[in-house]
Amino acid sequence: MIKAANIVSDFINKIKGDDYFGDITVTRAFPNVIKPTLLGKAAVAAGIKEINIEETSLGQNAKAGSVSVFADIYVPFSFKKERLEEIAFRICSCTADMNIVSIEISEISVNKAAECYMMRAVFTFSGGLEF
Image (cartoon, rainbow, N blue to C red; front, side):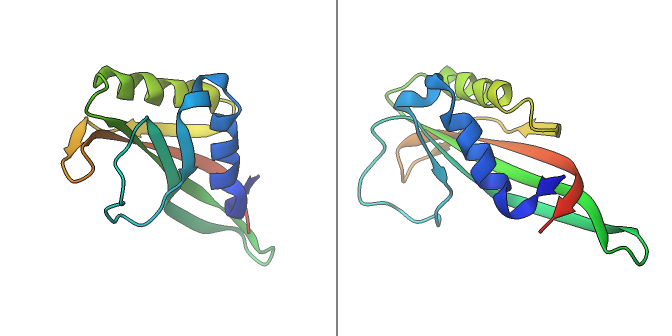
């Protein structure tokens, strides 16, 4: 059973529970606006990308479907771009026991305003949903 209201918090807590992320900021996604300071270290921002729900049993009010959570990964220009891939694969590793049915990882892109490299990973969970 997927607790939709907790999925992002559970996802973030799994990542933060890995010592590898000790020097990486891991947080909920925030509005896409320019911040007053530039990144000094790697960061991961997670949030809900999409939820799909369907009725699974007439008259039972049972819901099932999928929830997709994104993890935007950022590293300053001073880092090697390969660090993005390392972080993405480490997120895959530490969340593997969360009933993930698919993972999509984007190409590396450049965010000139934030002076950093970026990559998006989307993790889709499927099963019974509880709200």
